[in-house]
Image (cartoon, rainbow, N blue to C red; front, side, top):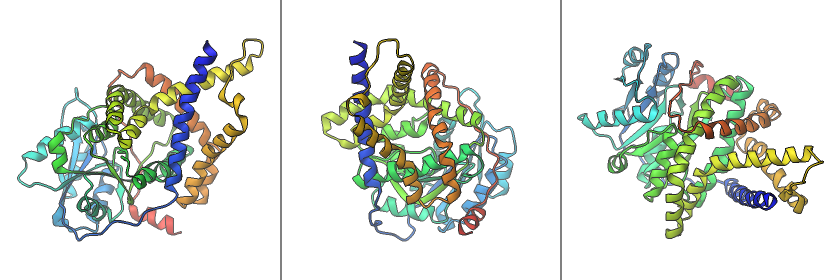
Length: 411
């Protein structure tokens, strides 16, 4: 009986994996860019910050240099429960420093919801809202590209997420590899196929009327995923702009990384539990591939959980030949699953090749499997602690400016 159950689970996991592998083939090419437009849209750039005095200045200097009319955008730093000089630094840079103090409702989702209410009270209105983190840097053409997409009909846009410190440690390199893979072989295929893209927590742009229409309401530990689900439920598919680059600072140590990823997975379980079935049934009823695809993505955290547990059971069974031998799908079609396994593995170096990563990055492919396997215990622990809604702050210390990054790329 256990054999059949495990085989059934493996079949479902294999189908989901094969589906994702199929989608990656649509990321090998890029469509012709849509029409470009003169600057028209006005933007409120919201910068989420909690004790970010070390890095916020570099971002604000970066935003002053955007290739976009200065009268068409304003910057608002959300100083959320700050106990340092984030607000003072922000004001010294000539932007709005909006201070919020609410220790009971902590986290970026609550901070954004508060800031939006404050924004609606202000005399000036904006066509769109951009959301960034204090540790970010953006390419100078970011707002120009968002302006183009909004005029071309997009209502929610996710930028290309990259890392500003990919070579600081094997952990930051693993994040960078993951980002390049997701941008090229996860996000771009969905953009090419007209499916819904997934918001990544920063580098996001929203049509103001859409937020006013449906409200923010995303206050979970993964507010980006939650708002993605809310949009797709309403038939609004977020789009992806491959050329709009946003650079994010990644944790240097495994401990800090594990803490960050635990928060992500706890939030992911929460969102999956609330949105999977409604979105899945709605997708079936409407025949909407975009809704079904997004529902499957919501379920991904359970795929990791169940896949890791089943794999460990099979590995333990192999190491104990004296007991009943459990069957795996590999036993039925070894050649097929060797090919699928090889294709799944080469996706990551393939992404590095397509994205023109530096040769130094390839050396980190040796330690990358360790990073990927570490998702297993993190996800299992997150499952048993998913009711913990306590937001945890990731400290940012790498003061890197866009000019430094560009000079390194040239050299």
